[in-house]
Each structure stands twice: as C-alpha cells, then as structure tokens.
Length: 593
Ligand code: C2E
Ligand code: MG
Ligand code: MG
Image (tube, rainbow, N blue to C red; front, side, top):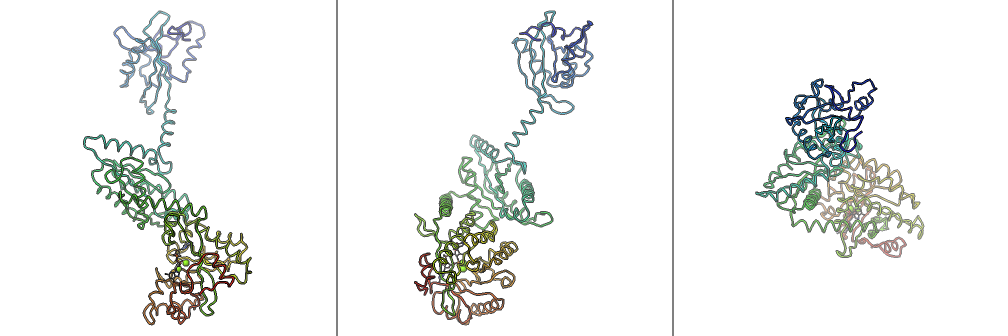
C-alpha cells in the first residue's frame, strides 16, 4: 500500500481518474479488490488535493467518510471542499491539509463534527501522497470515529467525580472546586471569601433501620434535591459520604447570605417526607466554616466545618454552628478525649464499680448497680456523666455497653463459683437508649447469659425514660425479648424527665428507680412527698418494685420506708465500690452499711 510518501501500484489506482463518488473506481476489466476493501473499511478515507488557486479539492471519499463528514452532492467529485461540505470546520481542516503538504509528513488531527445524529469525536491522520501521474499535492485523510470511546471515557470521568446515588459531585470534585475557588478568591483584584457547609442528617440511621436501605437511598436522593432548591445557582452541592452533604458558597461577601442558605435548609426540612406512605420528619445539623473566620486551606475549611457540624449535633441537632477559632482548641481536646475513650474501651481499661441496693424491710443486700469508671492517665477520674454522653454522641457506647454487660456476667460467674448461685445477688447494668437504637441489645444479653451459663434473674437492665421516649416501639420489642430471658428491666431516673404515669403500665418494666433529684426535694407532707406516695401506690398496684436512689441520710430512709418502698440505694449505705469489695459484700465479709 503506502510506502514512505509514495503511492505504489494498487494505491495508485485509488486515486481519482474520473468523477467517481467513491474511492478506487477502476475502469479496466480486472476485478477491483482495492475499491471493495476501501469501501468496506470501518473508518473513513478521503483523498484531498490542492488546486492551483490554493483551494482544497475532494477527489474521492469512501462511503464511511461521506457519512461522517456529511458531504453533499457527492456525484460531483472531484469538487472543492467548500462546495460539498457546509461545516464551519472546513477552514481549519483546509489549514491542516496545507500544513501536511508543507511539512511533507503525516499529522494527526482530533476534531468534533456535528452530524444529523449528534456530535462525533473524530481522529484523523493526514498523510501526503503522490499519485501515479506524479501529483504531489495530494493528502490521504483517514477518519476514525472515536465517539463511543470518548463517551465511555467521559462516563468513567463522571463516575470518578460524582456520587452514583444522587449524581452530585463527590468529595474529590468538591475538594477540587473548593481549591479552585480559594485560589481565585486570593488572586482576584478584589479578594473575596468562600464558605463550606457540612450538612449531616440527624438520626438517618433510624430511617435505614425502620424502613430499609432502599428507602434510605430514596430519602438521600430526595434530600439532595431539597438541598439543591435551597442553594444559589453558583453554589456547589456535593455528597461526601452516607448521610453527609457539603455545600460550597463561592464569592462570599459576608456571612449573612450563608446563614440565609442554612435557614432555608432548616425550613425545608420541616416539611414531612413521604416514604412509602409514611410521613417522615427529619432535621439536619449544619456546620459552617468560611475563609473569613476560619482557615484558607481547603482541607482545613472542610475539617473546621465538620467540627462545627459536630458542635451543632452536641447543641441538640437541627441547628447551625459557625466555626469559631476559639472553639478549635476545645474541639481538638474533645476529639482527643474521644480517641482515648475509644482506646480505653478497646483495651478494656474501664472498670465497673458496684453500688449496693438494699432491701429496706430486712436491711439485707438485695443487689448491685454496676457503674462504669474511667481513670484517665492525665485528666484523672472522668465522670460517667461526661464520658457516657461523649460515648453516645460518637457511637462508642455500643462497644462500651457490650463490654459492661459482659463484665457484669464475668463478675456474676466468679461470685457463683465462690459462694454458690443461691447466695449471689443480681447486678443491674445501665444500657443507653443509643445502644438500643444501634445494637441488638436482647441478643447481646442472651449471648452473654449463654456464654457464662447464667440464669437471667441475676442480670438486670436499667434504662432511662428519655431513651424509651426516643423510640418507644422498637425499645418495647427489645424489652419483651429481654424479659423473656428472665432478666428484669428497671426504669431509671424516674422523676427527672417526662415521668409519664402512662409508662408505668404501658411499658414492659419490672422496677422503677426514683431519681436522686426527686428524693432530694422530699419534705414530709410537701407536694413531691404526696406525688411520690401516689406513684408508689400506683406502681405497687401494677406489680412493679420501687428502688429509691440517692439516699444520703436517715430522714430520707424514714420517708421512703413510710411510703412502703421496698428497696434503696445511696451513699448512706455505700458508695459504689470496686469489684473486690463488692465480692466481699457478697461473701458477707464486708458490711454494706
Ligand atoms: P444512674 O444510673 O442513675 O446511677 C446512679 C448515679 O448516682 C451514680 O453516679 C451513683 O454514683 C450516684 N449516686 C448513688 N447514690 C448516691 C447518693 O446518695 N448521692 C449522690 N450524690 N450520688 C449518688 P455515677 O456513677 O456518676 O453515674 C452517673 C450516671 O452515668 C448513671 O446514673 C448512669 O446513667 C450513667 N452510667 C454509669 N455507668 C454507665 C454504664 O456503664 N452504661 C451507661 N449507659 N450509663 C452509665
Ligand atoms: Mg442506673
Ligand atoms: Mg438512676
């Protein structure tokens, strides 16, 4: 075929000798294989020439080339390029043909042609050739249609930078856009700032758990369109991960327009979302960081907005927190504490202390409440009031709660081996509402009892009213399963929260623990006294036991005994004690009062 720049033998016959509409028309009697081959090629082949007046002539074109170019009036070949091709690209193609002839070497030309069936991405090779007559002003042009490959490439690029579920930019693209915006703002004549918003859906896990993951996916898609409606046309929305979105507000002149975006989002979230016929209400927590109040490095902006979002969660969710530099240190130390708590749970560095529960009628030891203790190497004793909340916010409560249940069972097993099952008293373990929402508490309890071969009556579960309120139906079902194992359930902190008397008969509970705050307010004959007396009667009638918590003096003890309460717990009897001392109490070697 083609050798160097010369056309030899068969190719020479491709070159135009008549006004043929396709390449390689021969007029001798020999069979014309070349024409057949060239016409059947899956890419276009055109032979261009340069006329003496410097115009480009099309000598011949195979059918594929004709359709790719969209040549018209093809029967008139040879013809000037402009007379058969209406495209606006004829000048640049003509330039390329001239360039090929000037350079006397092949060149590659990538271009886009618009045909009746849309845009085509084409790749052409232009090659100078000489025909049998010695004409050196000819260029052989091959055209390959790379539309499918290009579209596939585009598709791959789209997936690399977009979230498959919502179609929004992903973290990588968001990070790139943010970087571009920061640089643009810094280099502008009138420097401007930008803001990053991290939007996290509150309690998204509950949607997934209650309605299933495909409903959760649909919710996320609708969430993306809600957010799109709330942002400006220049703003960029991205999905960073599961239930977390980010918004970039570029060209920000002040914080107020950003706060307005947040307000629009909170207002939009007040509308119920229809999930398979169920009205679902959710909220979002938003963290804002801007180049004005925070950092200028993209990663730092995202990190600061994320910190601010976590502060919004801690502040009670459904709100916006704007990042402040001062909160940085605080946030860092909180983060540090979180890491250490996680480690403490993993390495089992937490300890259980046991506070005796006394039978008021016999003054006998009735049981213990297990309370978790964390002795931090730098901060010293960290109160459970602090770290349980941190554990709940970070999800660490799940391994922590599992550890506490297991540790109680280990302790009970030791006692049984030492004094025999009959003498062992039950241990109450506190289980957080967050754990009920995220973990299968009933199975955890069942497995722990099986593992240590313990009767259910020796373990008791304490949970607060507020955790029941968060998810009454789900918790009720778990409690039913737990009670079926013979494990009693205590309603903790009664008197501090809702104190709805409804719970007393609606919920599957056995024991009510009256909170210390309520006990503290007791004066003989005052309102609290009368209320508690009534609750006591009601609970007893419903078959519940009552434990009065936080008893510190004899006056408290006299009052609760008068009310007919059966059990008590408080510093008057004993503070929570280490496992060894609790064992001594069980052995009868250490008094509990
Ligand atoms: P809680 O379950 O109501 O436990 C009783 C709390 O009252 C304990 O505080 C106990 O030390 C304290 N207390 C008992 N008697 C008296 C008294 O006479 N006077 C005073 N001033 N206080 C008394 P602690 O150990 O600081 O625990 C606080 C809370 O932390 C617990 O309240 C419980 O809600 C939570 N908690 C502790 N350990 C765990 C755990 O392992 N898991 C979970 N989820 N929560 C836990
Ligand atoms: Mg408790
Ligand atoms: Mg309590």
